[in-house]
Amino acid sequence: MQTLIEFIIGLVAAIAATALAQFGVDVNAPRQTEREVRRIVDCPEPAAAAAVKPQTKNC
Figure 1 (cartoon, rainbow, N blue to C red):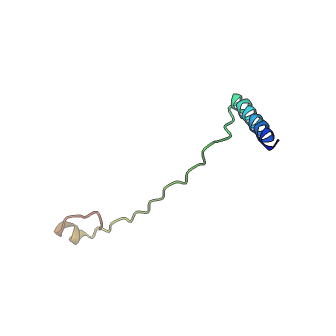
Figure 2 (cartoon, one colour):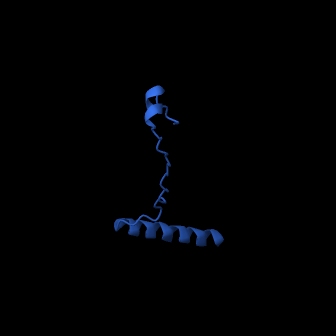
Figure 3 (cartoon, rainbow, N blue to C red):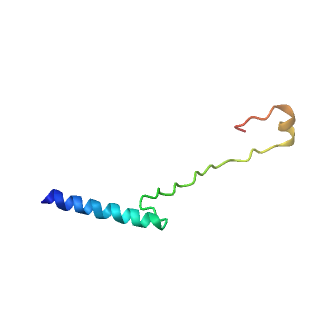
């Protein structure tokens, strides 16, 4: 009896998902991923130091 009830519930869920899909509704839509935040630091460029040594990526 329990198995029959679970089968009927699964069948109703499948029919509901199919009906909603006809209208463009996706019940298993993926979650929006959070944006990646990158913090960068501007390298200071003193006039004397810029001419003496080459620039590095790490300042």
